[in-house]
Amino acid sequence: MREIRVERAASASRIAEVGCASWPIWTKEVSVFPWSYDEDETCLFLEGDVIVTPAGGSPVRVGKGDLVTFPAGMSCTWDVKAPVRKHYRFG
Image 1 (cartoon, one colour):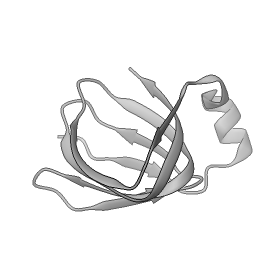
Image 2 (image 1 turned 90 degrees about the vertical axis):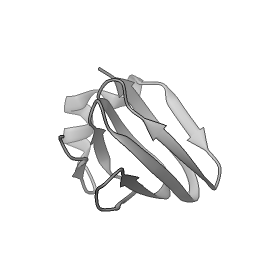
Image 3 (image 1 turned 180 degrees about the vertical axis):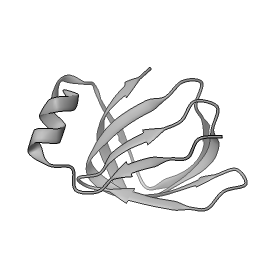
């Protein structure tokens, strides 16, 4: 299975290249919950601090400024340490 891909502190030019400023925004309060991905999700974290632990994998910490791609077929647990606000796109 593919791994979570993280671009730390994505530059303004990279954000413009991807076009995420026009994507919808998702928010989530501090919580812990299971999640699975039917298709790839790419997102830009505007706020937050999250530890995502793939089933059978190592935890990945993501947060403000990170451009992240979660792979299709992945099941994981989200541990939201600080409220999340992110742009996202599936596919």
